[in-house]
Length: 221
Image (cartoon, rainbow, N blue to C red; front, side, top):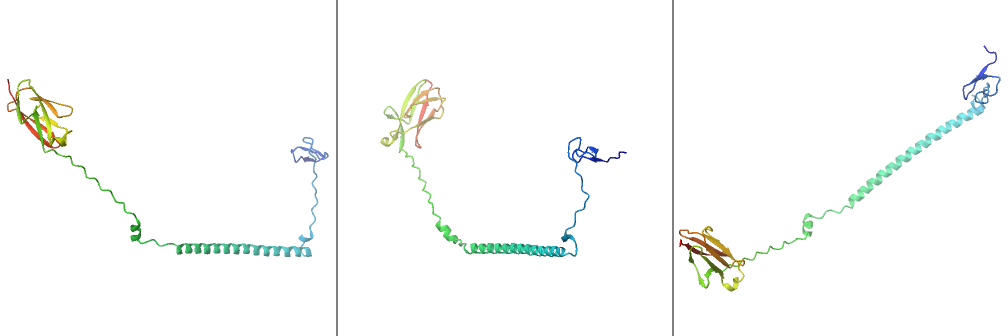
């Protein structure tokens, strides 16, 4: 066992002889701890005037602290109560200023009435008094076609002056017997024999709902 005590460096933990004043490892100066006990102050000694004054000051500090806490709580309660009263007053004032809704009859009467314009009636298509079919200047009600014969017919609506630009529709009851070839303005039509048909066929000419029928007979030779 070594006679000279060793000390431990508080910085690096190195152990070295107590005769050294610095650590040989890091060079930190050795601090010698004092073994003395600090002397008591008069205020810590019971029964002294300083101790009595310290206790009195502590009591007053506690009293003042309690009074301050009570004052803060009271102020918060007053502020909350005032805010609630103000809110109730505003709601009451708002409800008192609400304008009553007008009667239902007034609201309905104030809406302007939009009148729907009347729908115009369609202009009726004028109808001729009659439809006539001519071969040159001769009006026809019937005629006869020979094999391979073609006859050109012309239609006219009566009165002619009121239907100068009228259009006509030409149809035949059997187009395998008589072939029709209508002009661009529909006023003329060529009828061509295709085959013989006992009893013949019917040619119909229509203009604005008025029709004329011409019977066409066919013969074999």
